[in-house]
Image 1 (tube, rainbow, N blue to C red):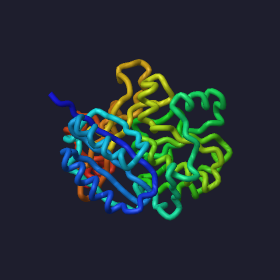
Image 2: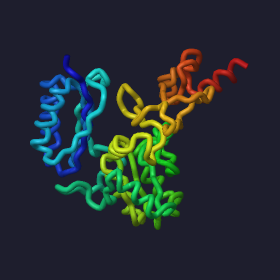
Image 3: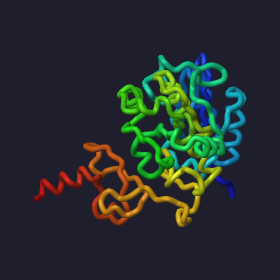
Length: 301
């Protein structure tokens, strides 16, 4: 019986003809019966695809012929975790609204933060203590179920919001600290760390492979707390046994405060597109976010 897998990857490098790469990637995925989402720009490629493991291996080998040095992350799941295959050309492979500011060469993003291996993250914290600040490079909702210990979580809904947030002055106190930016797989911090350095944050780092690599290395015994939000049908994952005493539960139901890592889409769509945390029991009786539930209660009182 064949085994399914999800393949995650990105690479920053100049792409002279993104449309030609798009056509090639679409044909390759279709020939291997893979589903997923691939974004291509003049700065590089960012993809997540799922399917039969052998087909994923063939895809990785062929893609690496052009994107030399590409590193892949393997995850549980498969083709069924994606609604379709989407391969698109965009101005940015991560939408920070910084296409004109971002500079890449054959080695990757220019002017970004220093890369740290997972064990080097712990070493830096052990050596410098409170002088090290973790800075979450994801949207604030993702951090509701997991984050690094004592991390600063910016008040952002999307990557579009980061530049204004960095320029707001809220985080100027961090400019002389050792700042470890982090995100799911590392791609957002390739850009974010460069944007931070351009704005006066002097000593900025990023984690090789992001939260995923760190979690794989340390499980429940490192500086990561809780679960990881992921952008496919699974919605979240853990790096260790959630029943382990070292596991720290961060997510809670917005209605009853019961522990949960399960995000739901508010049933008031399309009027209110909102993801929120809900336990199974509350979801069955009240499939609406807190705001919509409160408004409905007010209208009937």
